[in-house]
Structures are given as C-alpha cells and as structure tokens.
Amino acid sequence: EVQLQESGPGLVKPSQSLSLTCSVTGYSITSNYWGWIRKFPGNKMEWMGYISYSGSTSYNPSLKSRISITRDTSKNQFFLQLNSVTTEDTATYYCARYILDYWGQGVMVTVSS
Amino acid sequence: DVVMTQTPPSLSVAIGQSVSISCKSSQSLVYSDGKTYLHWLLQSPGRSPKRLIYQVSNLGSGVPDRFSGTGSQKDFTLKISRVEAEDLGVYYCAQTTHFPLTFGSGTKLEIK
Image (cartoon, rainbow over all chains, first blue to last red; front, side, top):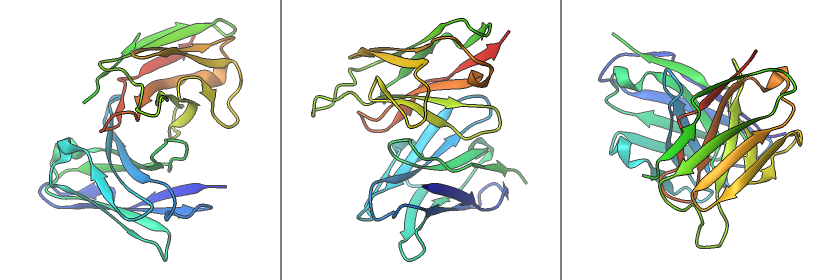
C-alpha cells in the first residue's frame, strides 16, 4: 500500500523559510512524479510543484523563485522549501503523487509572528 | 493558467437523491496524446483529498459506481447517483493537461 506522510513545523515566522518533509512508503520516488499542493483557508487549492523520477523539478510560476523541491532517494523522501513566507502562505500543505491518486494526510502551517 | 470554473459552489441534497456538479475549463483539456486529463476529487471532512475519477470517466480504486464522470473538451460533469451520507464534503475538479496543474474552486455537498 502506498502511503505518504508530511512532517514539519506548524508555525513559521514571516520572512522565514517553511520546510516540510514527505516520507513515502510502498512505492519508490525514483518512479513517477511527486509534488506539493496546498489548500488555503476556504476551499482554494494550489499546486506548488513536483520532483520527477529523475530528480528534475517543475514549479508553479506563481511561486517564482521562492520554492525548492529536493529529495533523498536513500530515505524515499522529498522535501519542500518555501522562502520568504508571509501570512498569505498560511495553508494546509499536502504531498501527493502528481496524478493525484495518493495523498498525505496534510500538515497545517501557520505563518505568524 | 487554465481556469476551472465549478458550479454550483454548494449543494444540499437528501439521501438517495442524485446530484450533478459542473466543471468548465478555459481551454480544451485534450492533450497531444488524445487523452483528456480531467479528474474529480472529494475531500471529506477531516480527511485528505481522494481521487474519485481520472481522465474524465475512469473510476478510481475502490470508488463506488454511484459516481460517474462525463464530458469532453472544456465541459465536464460529475454525477452522484443515490447520494449516501458518506458523500458529504468538498468536490474538486482538476486538470493535468496543461502546465501548471489547476483546480476548480470546489463544490460543498451537504446532506439534508
């Protein structure tokens, strides 16, 4: 069974960086595409980016140069870093396979001083 | 970006009734391989999203056949026949044809 699990701090100060980890079991991240999606308060969902089986990345242009997705294949984990956060980055962050069939349980991140 | 317009924003239905949700895209969702990458998701309260339907009309794993998807090009519909209590939550359409992946604004289904 494929399972994804996000981890990371639930509170980040404005202007700092948000860092999250997605641990995948039951499937190798060296296959397929793995990404990050966030849901804002209310219902709006935003795809942030993905890392491919080869390690190449693709990001939502809306996030410009603030985002980085990396991975550790030895641990079957991939990571999100979002820099210079503001209160508008407050959301629940999910890791998921790009074809949207497997999702983590989500982690709520609040940006506040 | 491809804009996905979902209607209605909310629905209230009785158990056993049928309901339809519309999703219209600002561009055709037919990819160069001829396939249409339009999907439907359900986020139940307190849960992460679950993919119900992929590529317009294919049921996801373990999804009951009360759910069905139809449509083509820019106009898509999710139908739930014989609504059950467990169907409550927020439904989203999403497209992976064009970069970047985009979602509809969601339809909240409540049970009367």
